[in-house]
Amino acid sequence: MTKSKSFASKANNFLDILGGKITTAVGTMWAAIAFSLLALVSLPAALSSGNSVVIVSWVAQTFLQLVLLPIIMVGQAVQARKTEKRDNETHQAVMEAHKETQQILRELHQRQSGQ
Image (cartoon, rainbow, N blue to C red):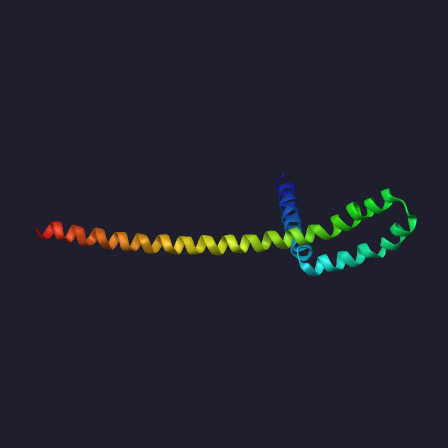
């Protein structure tokens, strides 16, 4: 049983690493550009069919799915960085306010002790 747990654990670790690398690679504007070029290969065939269902299908199933996924991932990464920066700034401001409050309390305590 330990061997299967160990194997499962190693397999899951490998898959986590692989998934992270794929996510990092796909979540770039370079991937969006590459996918756009790949999608454009089939555009002439869709347009020459003259069938509106084929054209709408190309837009929805080929272009949007291939191109929007990496763009959304890039947008999420940008938003995450902005949120992290804002959170760090808020934390720093709260810590400064806490230090000031502690200093004021020390001074009040010293005044009360001195009376």
